[in-house]
Image (cartoon, rainbow, N blue to C red; front, side, top):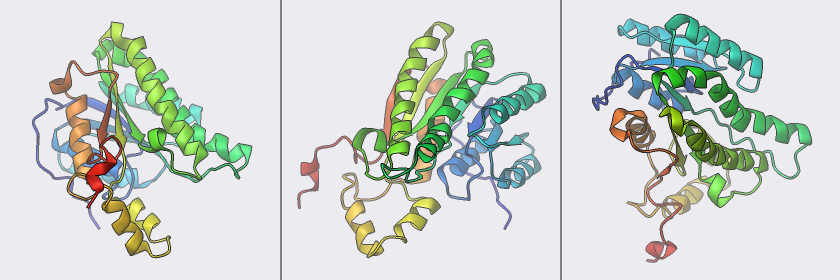
Length: 272
């Protein structure tokens, strides 16, 4: 099926910005793919780093609409592949304006997992963020660009059975504040988006693995204070694009929670 990257335009002055985005070659409807579509709608030039060959198809679709793009197929657990991907992007465009660290897999590396499994989770979900920023910072200093890290409620609430992912996402929030301090003298903003319950293809697949999945889904949705519904990927993407845009020009070091109040609001709101 051919993917059409068309959606509404928020006019955020992102046209021709070179945006490095990891994990954007997910299936249609995933958060990364949704952010990608919105970037294209704004006229930004996406530089996708992902392991899935689907990225080649996405770039072709984007270029057919008259917008340039590049896909660097890379294992984001491999520092050398990350370094080479950034080099390829710079060789093509000679600059980087924005970085969106979006890759993430809740891989279930818990207390029963091996050392190797725990470390693999950290490499993908945390170390890749560090390596992407390490290699893009020299170019962000030139462009006075900004960094957006995609985080998870698991960093704040825990979940159970996912020590690696929880530790990684906690680290992502720590790095967000650390980098905001490190880079403030270069006018580089660094923020994080925290996601809770969002209806994506991966979430749909996960819920179907549970016993009484329909009842479980209903119980989750009932615990989301605002309108008792899940956050859509488009709502997350809209917040991401606003945050990386000039319209958010004095926002840095922030954890922006896009979750219908799931994490932070009083549980008494749920009393019937």
